[in-house]
Image 1 (cartoon, one colour):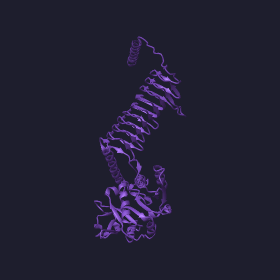
Image 2: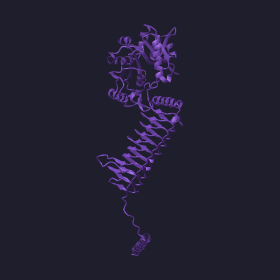
Image 3: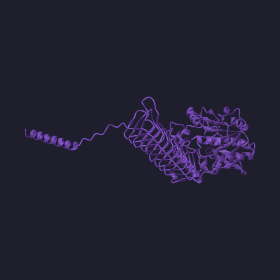
Image 4: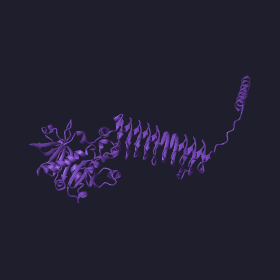
Length: 478
């Protein structure tokens, strides 16, 4: 858009039908609060600033929005009392006192509006030349929605359902509640809105008739599902399902295979390369980036992690803030915790857990291991049952394994400790001091074989059993 654009997103409602102590706009939908989606769309359109009008749980709502958009040009306005949509927008006037241009008005509980729709609204506004443009929709059942009233095909007003005549209620075209308004008109018009209606509220829809008196009111039509709001948890789930389908469809059309789209959850903002395959019940969330030709098996959860090209993630593996290099093999049932950093061709097998661990190229830990606060070189083999003892009850300490190290099964590496390049640690060893390069470390107690011990034990047990039986017989005779 060439003209200056700001946005006002209404996030002040309590949402009583949610039956919740949490403000409605904070309820999550695919990993983000409900209000995040209209805010994202406004920012994508180039709106600056974007004003969130808060009310119920204002501090919590503002904190959540700032956390999700830390660098965005955000401002906040407080609606002290719930007196209608016009009053809510009017609350944003002071936050936009230095702004002159067009104001996009959105609702914090309408998550499915598309950027393309808002761009089309902007184009229609530019072409129409009026002071206000709107989005309309045609629901299957228009009951409860404001009707778009036209005369000679031109929009002249919007009538809320409760105020509509029987004839007006026959109109199928409804107001979606999305407007683009010239600021020079908006604030003056809002000051003249009155609450003389069935609900005694200040209706934002009254702006339409005022705008129509000054010139044409442009409109575009959007699908009802795109403009549908959220009033209760049933509708929240329905909107989430639609958003899930939309996101999954986008990825499939861009070369990603989803074995079962109905059970695959991909948050908006996740990036996936072509020819990647996702199994059923996979969840990809946060700032996750998945490369090309990656296979992610059933039940995997990947959050805020990167997975490079050609990697295989076997079923039920969990990644949290981890970085995985090319051609790695993970799982099944591996857990990569924050700070895990794997180079190329690393193998982490079943029931292996890592945390703040860096593993060099070609290193392997294929079974039942815990590697925490570890720096591991390339071509290292970590045997089954190995753990890094990184916590002394107060501080965390680092374990360092050089290139080509071989760690035998059931080894405990008591940090801080270093094992030099090419060293071997025998199975069952507790390593408490550094191991020089090329050395073998063994701390096992020497094995002792006591020949004949089993037979002697059996004889003692038999004699004990006979003695016990004899005493029992005497007690019975007495």
